[in-house]
Image (cartoon, rainbow, N blue to C red; front, side, top):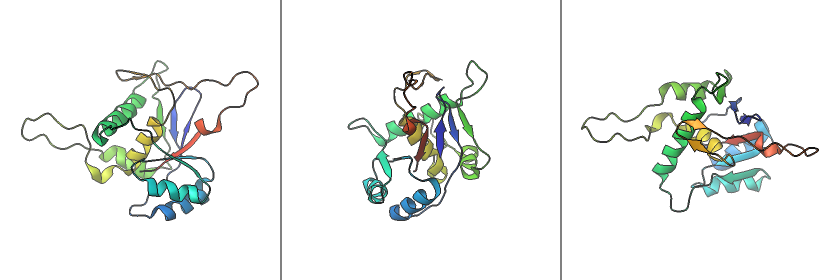
Length: 178
């Protein structure tokens, strides 16, 4: 589960991690563990999104540009995560991970790229074994509204509600899965 504060900082506070699970099983577990929050999924997996919707959960596919190659989307997402890891003017990053998320932490520690043996241009796409939590994080960060990026500086800042208006709930609680 990823929450965002009013300054656009992301907090990974809870995780569910299991490989080779059916979309219907994941939807049932998500409903029980996390409740009715906004779920972000890979738009390339419409069957899983449908399973969430079947049981009344708000699940949307992460928006990719029309005809965008998957590799380009992955690289853009990695850059978004990297931007959130940069120390900002207040001496803090824009991404925090709870100790209650050991698999997410392990993926950060083990995230790696192919070895460049032939002096070719290195691929920015990571190796697959440690990417499920990273995929979910990328989906959540890429789903944020009005992101502005200049180099590695992340300028994401949600619009505050007008006086007397409640905050948008779906901007505070999001769950993404990969």
